[in-house]
Length: 198
Length: 296
Picture 1 (tube, rainbow over the protein chains, first blue to last red):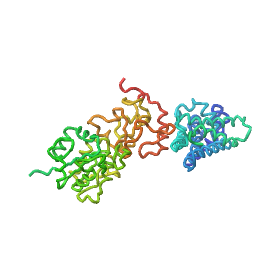
Picture 2: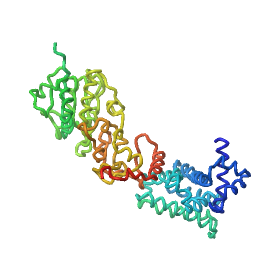
Picture 3: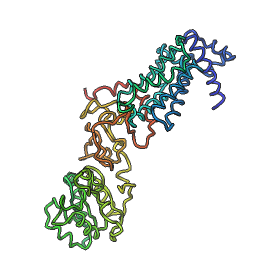
Picture 4: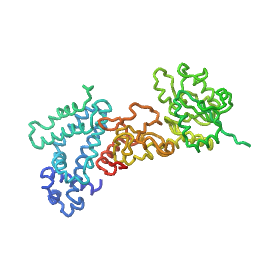
């Protein structure tokens, strides 16, 4: 990775923290520059606008999840075990790097107008969606999952995980986040599993 | 001095005559050229003065063409008190080139699925090539249900002129089977942008997503040379059913097999992950022109 790329990623990591806590509109380029200890002018050498930075940030954050799921997809384990593993990794992300998921929930999903041009549909999250497709396809082709529409299956997984990240962000959970992991995974598995599976 | 016209003998085994029909539908001037260039010595469906005995008495056959699947079981099929296998063993020894015309002759086709007779196969699984001393090249498979008449003509003319034709791993002529039925399909723009056909028989939409089209994974030149010089299945709004491949005929040929909405097979040689990523991206864009009727 080039120095410029590394610097860009560093800016994104700082921006993710600010966007996810203060919100997209309450965060300014000077705020991010300040967190980076950079001049505002120099910031524009990396990103032409706050909107452009926001779009890079969504690709960056979902690609972290895509990479984790891709590794799991390549593992020689059952689809059930994959669900348990991915749920655990996802919740660890929520716990250890809350800005990644918070950014998705509180900026990407909440400010669609920012992403309307160039990030519509699956454009900026395609790598992650592809991994979910691969995961579902393999589970169904092996008979572990029942046949159903892609979007109903997709929303079962991501709605469940996203909902829990939201609850965690609101600080309403009474136990440590990771203690819920196996229960959540079991729920996702039961929603997907084939009638023949125990 | 009259030039020697290469002799063609066409035999039929378990067949629906589809390949014969196809040959007779060849472009008339091409068919005329075939008859003028070759000596079409024998064909069981065409009235000639020659009989099967005349074929058996021939010393040499330039081109032996077989249509239909082969069985040694006389209970199910025989010609003049002889099993097809025995007949073929006699005739093949005299032949310089042997061509399986159609899927049934190539590997048994639909007949191989007949459960009452387990001995139904294609020509290359019937003959022992080592015993065929006159044979100049391995048995050639022209797969297809039926074959395109031009595939027969192209193979015969190539062999006549050059003495050899290069074959793929399935023993099919490379020049005919190197590409995919997808190549030249008039629906490719719909395929690129993932716009589905609403039903069969329409001009608009791609038949890959719902209707089971096998164009992107079927080796044939249908969409490049066209049938009857004018049309193809996919151009007419009927999916390619993959009739030139060795898994033909498959079950549920007019449906695309999917797992949770994801096509279980993706275009030939394409990584599934890459294909799914590009599909998701393409579907994001709604191209107005591709969602309208072509002729209002």
